[in-house]
Image (cartoon, rainbow, N blue to C red; front, side, top):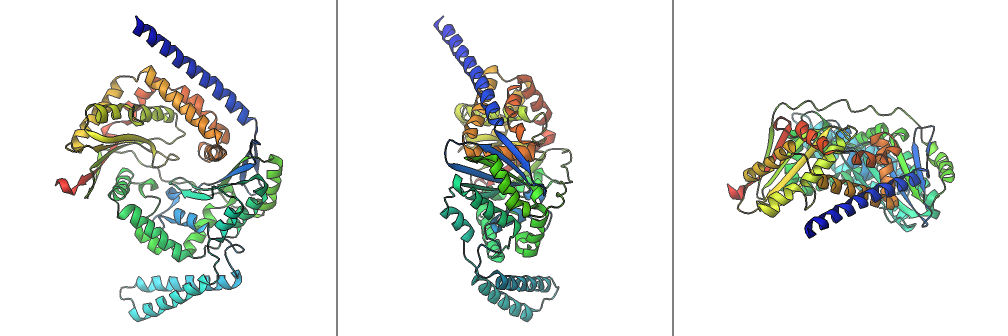
Length: 502
């Protein structure tokens, strides 16, 4: 009797808490939405502003709608490389004498083209190459004399930028800053100059840096090599099949001219979305945006990616042999984030494989002890285009990947035959709402959500409808997407095979 009463009380509290979160989130979202203002410049650049006067700070988020998925053969890795170059300054910042510097840079570019043409010959002239390479090094040293190293970043940090950063993904390149509210116009000046007058100085040096990142992050790490091969097998047509860092041969061949052309194509103002959240006044922001960013010439928006990953016709496998811990991953093709099935797939990934209370963790790690770690990814490696929902397992000592695969398959089949419990679903929904609310508390988090929703979902306001769609997911929806997507024909299995075990 006590147990039954205790259980009823717990369920009552859980339901009350869930209803309270729903009510609280609705109030919070309405309050936030009512304060958001937008403005589109004549050149197509969009500004989204949320006024928050609680503290004299502002977060800035620039979303460039270009990532590694936009790259073609021969220039893989260029999105990430361009992100590095965006910190090298402009015609004004980062140089002691731009007029003289650019002459040297142009000569270097022309000479590099000659070097590459000579190297491509069946019988290259070694003496000519030696002479050209020597001259190239002379020009590199001369160009360095005009450079003010890290001046762009140093100027931002000197004015209090606590978050100066950027990152490139398969779907986008994003630039982040956080400054005191009395430095908004300073940010406007610096950032508009960054996108209006890029120089791409120290290109060959920075290209070497990115190549070293590839060596350290991919080629010298078994897991890095494995993930690269896994995506190459899982995606046979769509550019999700290559990683953000790019292929080494492409990095070795990309030129400064390639970067200029890529920038001109993808960094036009109509391909940039800016969110500014914090102690600002929207009318003042829009006025400054017109003054600073309105100077940037407009142009045609880049063409969307044409290639759609075709239907998979049977199970695929990717295997990497290495002196490393065995590792297993199962990836299943799923639609892009805007598809109606997205929210049920999010719930499926969480219930099945995210966190220590998830089904596969409880089964494989806690109960059967065949694994030391396991989990799930959704929207892998990106979510703007059709992608993967994936499950990974690290076998425990004395247990094999085949054993783990068999048990993982059992959990997937169970999900298709039996609906998830109401408690599992409510727990996921509560957590998803809380996660969104927590992110919205931060100016930086809010800015990131607004640019993502506008660029990927289609409108910034859709950031606030996601909770409704999460809460609308039913147990039968999860069961249906499990049946629809988690099947052998749609699966790519990747495995690191330990050489030590052979």
